[in-house]
Image (cartoon, rainbow, N blue to C red; front, side, top):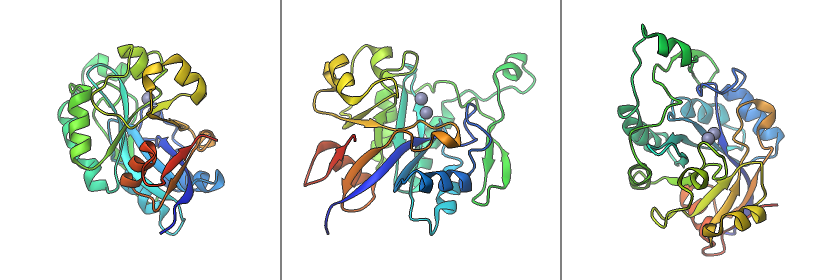
Length: 252
Ligand SMILES: [Zn+2]
Ligand SMILES: [Zn+2]
């Protein structure tokens, strides 16, 4: 099978994220992805994959491949993009993440102040319910622990927007640790891959991935990365990030 070029935006939020716009519903996300020329998208709400299956369902017949996952927040406060092939794999991570997130007391005033509606929908964009956890808080798991769970469930973990002051790996830790062995890092829209390599020399030979981190529709595909793969799977993404067997990425 030949290697083909696929346009990817691996970091998209839905209306489940407290900071996501209500327009981020499955059918419109897929429509926007098609409009942006995307072949692969990642669904990554904060600390939850509860809307990922709905987006997968909405993508049927569209030609867009949807990778379910989440943007987990570690104990250190670092955002980590975690993506999988199957929803069941993402749910394994979600189970651990939910167990380590504070469960709110709905009568607590602090809860009422910081909590925003976190909406769960189905594949037809219909309202299913509200997620009652504080999705915007850090979990009590450190980076290593989240990595171990993600990796053993067959997922890929890419530190999100490493250059962002509050939640980016390089700004929070001041470095990229040798372990876990990240194959790639993501940068925000504030810099390009060359600038990132100059600013953070310990990126070394890791791939630098650009995604939109879209919280509203018009942002979807604003930043993309081209992946040269045999087919669209997490294992192929990992090979492309490491430049193995003819797979590679391109930041153009
Ligand atoms: Zn983030
Ligand atoms: Zn994000």
